[in-house]
Image (cartoon, rainbow, N blue to C red; front, top):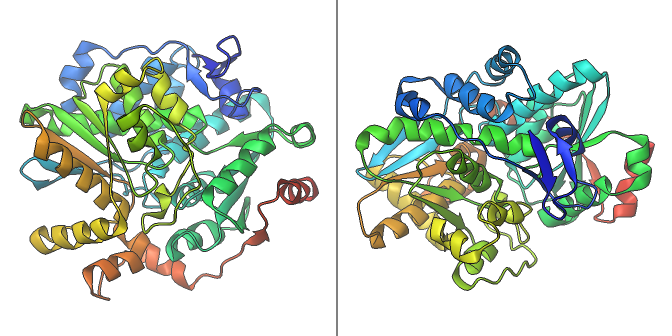
Length: 434
């Protein structure tokens, strides 16, 4: 796989270079120069395949020039011991549950595959890598779990103070070992800016081999495409056009879905659904992209005012607004609407949703209410509801929401985090001295 920078198509890199570099030298994003398509036989037969069979076939289609098939199969088997089930909720709405991995969030798919891929390359090169990652919640926990005690890799996680849930914070501050957490006095956008600036700093790059586990890294997007194929395989027998409703913050998840579609997955429509941080739905309405400071909401993992993957999302469509709008519909909902959806669906069906899942559900219902034809709607559940326990209990008006044991056990563990300002100079000095 050859990749190019979104800012300069002449700046190219191999897969291994892009994985470890994370960002091109010009601060663009890496994009595949060519997107191969899966075979028609695979699309016909994938409803008979397991998640790992699907993941292997998709990754082989993309990466067969970089990694031998036998090694790829071993990477897939080592990364994924969990599935991505689609659960029927209503006649035309289904929930793709992406929280069955170790951190109980969709980021497990990207983090575990990326960790396996980096480890594979590191064995050959004998390099040591320092990973920097900004998180608005779930990325940190998934990266902490995925890279914990992986040889030759150390991890520094930056998260915004007071803007992640208690369980999310414990997931990224209680492991120790090769995982360090920095509690930043700022927003997720501030954390993300620190990470991006670090990759462009000469002193830091002289001392360390830096890499990112955020969705800016192409190694995160590739495995996230797997579960779109897996979801489609589970609903294709229904015989209707398939619509994916994606709760969106940094837009890596949606970009991965578009990658799947470009590889041949017959998706009828994508829905880009956000909370009040609605810069992309606004862009889809007007054609003008206007980033702004993020606003705090109950769906905190989506509190992003300048999505890193926006340029990838549009580049898939040649940066043509009309083409983007033709394939992606935008919706946004406020906290009051989100709480009401969580409460309503639970009352009617007994199904519990985290606030991000509820936003995706609302987007799907809004789309289907005006669609010109019946569709099979799949809304993505990006995290287990118990990771947002206070929000769920408040929305439902009950303190008796059940918590899985592996999450409940975290609450008694001591938090270990280093306080950090949003000044890059402070961050740089910490890295140089640690």
